[in-house]
Amino acid sequence: MIIREYFEKLDLHDASIEKVERLGDDVILSIRGVLVLKDHPMSQGDNLFIEDCKLKIVGVSSEVAKFWENDVAPISHPEPDYPLDEIMNASFENGVFHFDGFKNTTPWYEWFLHANGFELDVYNYKKGGT
Image: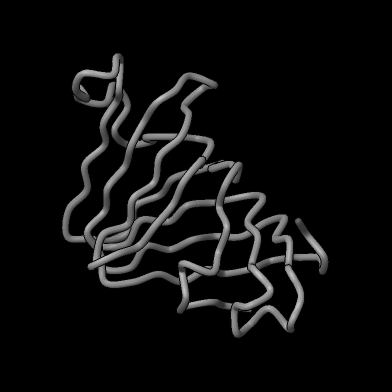
């Protein structure tokens, strides 16, 4: 199953990023633990827990990774090629993907990608995830 629409109906809270790859203008994330909410058109009317998938961010024109060492202002990310490994929040609005969360259990990191869209390539899932 490949999902290309309704990013807002995907719940990536607590999803883990296992790998980050860059291929041309695309950024590909190997992810575990995504929830497709039951009101997503491809959910088959039930929450779907995705155990393993790849999220391809398509047509990336720029990206910025930040690290919040304190609550005053972010600094440059020490590992911008692999900005975070656990997602707490994810959104896609006005052509910008925004992820924030942890890196090696340390908070707080942010990652912004200006892009055209996404493809979520689902390898396996089970119904009824919460």
